[in-house]
Structure formats: structure tokens, C-alpha cells
Image: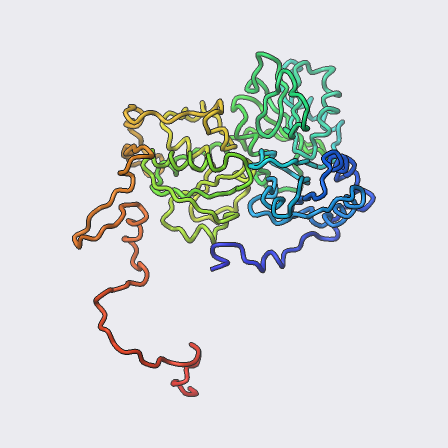
Length: 489
């Protein structure tokens, strides 16, 4: 049961925290982990207990980093590892259990706002970038010096974007440099004009300009990765970027560039297929993929109301990190929707491992909300907060008497005509209708019950009143391989 519905304890005990060959040399710890900045952060807050969150690939350095910080600050350090959902999110719950007054997050981060207020410092890392090679690659990909282009990067290369822009600005007139959307220090004033925040980054757009006008040049990735789809940060940018604008990537080590247009088209086609699967689904499983990101409860209520309005039945499942073994316990569910941070939603999934597709909240919105713009006009939103009221991308559900609910819809997968949904508001007492049975028993009418009735084996049957009452007798003794009455044979 433990290995079916949750990760086994032995897996966590036997997992190697870090290989000695991958550890950072001691004389490089201060530079790689920006310990001087972290020490200033702890001293300014006057914290006595600080949580240090490391991803799995950096846990080998956690002990040395914690020891140096304790020696420099005099504060008690707690190492957080093996988070319940994703290492890119701030583990607020783990920090509260340790009684920490602040948290320092090391490694790649989604920069999603935490659900509870807690001072957080992010150390994204500083990967070396070959500026001259990247500048030549940029010029080869963008021959027009007047074309608007945004410089993007993976979090560890963000420190080099301004230096790269300095090399390019003498020739390129409309160059925009993005920066990670790190939380502003307490007491600091917001810049005026306030930059646009999207994809976990800040874009200092000029008044009257919009991000859809710009092409993109992404610095990041590695040639050692055979499948570029394993990078959720780049996937988030490709899905959300304007389809008509060029998008190219550059390896920071070698300067090798690649046009990402083909990959972006493949990702969008995959997402449109998932939208069709969601429209055909009758039962939707909502996977709680985070407990530490802000507004996750509001987003969960929004998705439940969305599925109910579309005539679908939804079930909320809290299983930690989704695995094929966990989700296989719910065969009546047609599709799963992972409610997580942007990087967690787009995390790579083993091909063909899940027996049902796993969707993002935006795809469920496109499938269940008839007022959602058609493909090609609607943006692909990677963060569930963009779907909620108050966001500029929020599209409210049409009223029950709207003609949008009655529009004919044909499945592109099965070719069948989909029936219009029976729209029911959330306070409608008929949403849990009971169907009388001939024996005057009551059973809830639901797709899950219909699925159970179609199975050949439905579990143990009580057969109340149909079994004669007999006295208790002694049963067989022993184990299944050799009972006592079986002899030596």
C-alpha cells in the first residue's frame, strides 16, 4: 500500500544525496553559492534560525555551505532536502516545521510567490558564459539591427545578460534585457514605470510597447542533453511566446545556436491534443501538486467549478509527486490535471509511462470554458494564477443561458458529436442527484459509479441476509506454503 499511494521510505533512505565527484571545491564555495550575499541577508534580518533549501543535485555541498554560514553568522542552519513536490518551489512548510525565521533557496527556482509570508533569498548560481561566442551567435541569428529582440537566459546565466547586451548595443537599437523576478528587498520602492512580470522574469518595456512585438534569444541549455524537452523553463517560454516571433537558443559554453520554432510548434501541437482529450473526458482528476505556492486553494476551487460547469465529474487527489504507479490506482479517471508551479506543471514525463494524460490548468480551461479564445488567439498560460479573477488573462464563464454552451462540438479524436454540458451552478442542490433503484436503494449517479458497474469484478460482496448463520469453527493453521493439515507432501 505504501509503494502504491506514496513513495516508499526505502527509496529516500537509499537515494544518494550527492556524489563526491560532483561536489564543489571548498575554495569555490563562496563564489558559487554567493555566501557573502547570504551572510548579509541573514545579518540584516537578525535571524537566529535559517533554513537552507537545496535541490537533489546540490545536496553534496549542503553540509559545507551550512557550516560556513553558521561560522560567519552565528545562526543555526537547517538543511531542507527531498521536498514533497518540487525543489524549484520554496518549501515554506518545511521551514515552518524547523522553526526557521528565513529561508535561502539554492539552485533553479520557479520564483512563484509563497503561500505564507517568509523572508526568502534566492541563489540561482553563476554559470560561466562565453560572451564573445554568444555575441557572434546573436548576430548570425539576427541580421536586422532594427528588429526588436529580448535577451533571455536560464537562471544561472542571468548574471551575464547585461554584459552581453553591452557588446550588442552599439549595433542593435531595440534590445531588451530580461532579469529574474526576484522578490524586492523589504522597504524598497517599486521602479517607475513598473516592469512587466511574466515567465518568472521582469521585462523593462518602454511605454506603449508590448512583449508580443519582440523576438527572443535564449542563453542556456547544454549540448550534453540529448532531449531539449527536458528543460521545463525553456518549454514555458516556447509555449507562452508569441507564435509569430522568432525564437532561438544559444549554448553558453560553445555559442552553438538553434532555431526553436520547430520545437515550439511540436509543444503547441501536443498541448492542443491534450485539450481535445480533456473535452472528451467525463471524469477529471485534480492533482494537488503544491501546498506552498500562493492562491493554490483558490485555483483548486476554480478548477472544480470549471469542470462542474462543463458537465464533468472531478476528484481532488493529494498524492505528492505524481508517478505512474500512483495514478494507475484510479482507472475511472480519464485525464489528470496537475495543479503546480509553472516548472512543476511542465516537468518532463517519461514517454508512455502514464496510462492517462497529465494536463496543465490552462488546457483544462481551454477545454471547459466555451468563452476561451480559439487556438492561435489564446495565450498559453503556464501559471494557474493567470486564470484566476484579477488577472488580465482571466476569462469568466458564460452565464447558463448563453448560446456558447449549446454550440455544436465534434471530437477531433473520436469523430463523435459531443453533447452540450448540463450547466449547474455550484449551489444547485441537483448537482448530486440520486437515482432510485428497484430495491428502493439509493445510489449516486456518477461516471465513476458507471465505470464500476461495467467492471467484471467489483470487489467483495457483503451478501447481507443471503448467507446462513453458522457457529465458529477452528480454521487451518500455518502459512500458505505449508498448512499443518497438509502433511509433509
